[in-house]
Image: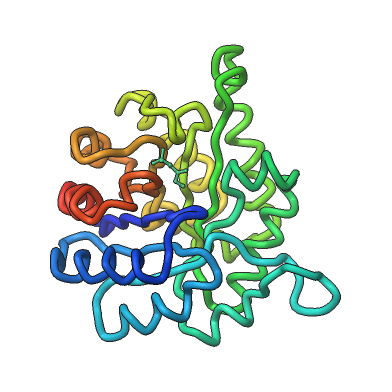
Length: 246
Ligand code: 13P
């Protein structure tokens, strides 16, 4: 039985005071049956780590460099994150693929860099609306996943996968539980061909998950929790989504 995981992706939102309020409310709302974590912007990570110390809620970053160290202005290395006790790092979010031209290989290299420092990468895959409408969903997510599978080889079982259809992110338009389950099953089959541990791997769904649709999505056999954007910024909503992952 895979324990569900719900991760809040705060994206470029927050303030020191606002984060403190949000985390205090979250801590008061827990614990949950599911594992819960929040991924905050880099400058806030030390605050978040301190605030969540001794609490069951984990934390992570939203990106890391594919490189170990050196002349990469503006980048943050996985070795730096791990010094603070970082548990997760999101890699290959569609916003980074789109706005920072991250290729499938760069995403895979970032996942590898995270694992080298014992941080669990949350590897995002997902198709655009145009790709879905032209019947390319399966091909696109399989291509994105296969580069990660080949790059990580026997370590692939250590990643968390997040299926986030680009057309469902921040749009209020969620994939139906059936649409999401179909892609999750496809990804599980692909992972199964690569590792004997595919059955233990978590595949999260992300894209307009809210308190009112979370339970039906999380009830699907291959959906092991969620990567939550907008709803993770409101304590009551995020707590309700976490509760739905029982
Ligand atoms: P929303 O939940 O706001 O649609 O964002 C999803 C997402 O991108 C999480 O990484």
